[in-house]
Image (cartoon, rainbow, N blue to C red; front, side, top):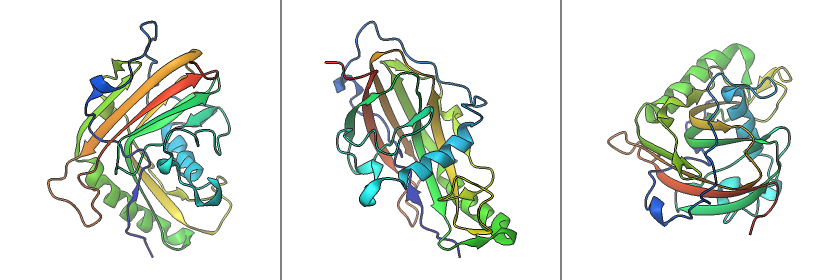
Length: 240
């Protein structure tokens, strides 16, 4: 049975408001290039990284959820490997976080995204139909992206709408080993993401905003989601 509830992308970002009021980066800061959609990090592309990102959100201890991080204090939790994951919010408030990122780490974050998973484990023979249903539901809002704005060190990313990524086939919601279970809770993701190469040591800022605009709220209330979030990243350690 498919769980029809759409889960917020903990990075469901909204239209940027008051960007000029946000902290300005140092004049010497240079915007990091966004890696193209065919880029891979140790064999993982955007779609695979989005699946790993969702599993990351389930690995927080004690029921903690990354979108509830009030100020960046949870930034280091459950991080591993060459890619550092950043979360957004649940859309209920604008958030500004500061966290330290090790050098030589790629950074992967959502602009705006949605996720669904099955309520119960699904046998392999039934997965294609269930997966199509999940993806079709997610596409309704992502097809109706109204606006997206991303600033990296004060420089605007050109056409962030082009970084749409969806998992073409569903993935195991909890197991990184895709061949591990005959029956599995399956999940699908659709949204807009950014993969950044390792940043130079020092302070960097990321400002993200986007919103869906389906014209009328859907049953789950995510069809017109609006959200803003900002990160101050101290690459290589705190900078004060």
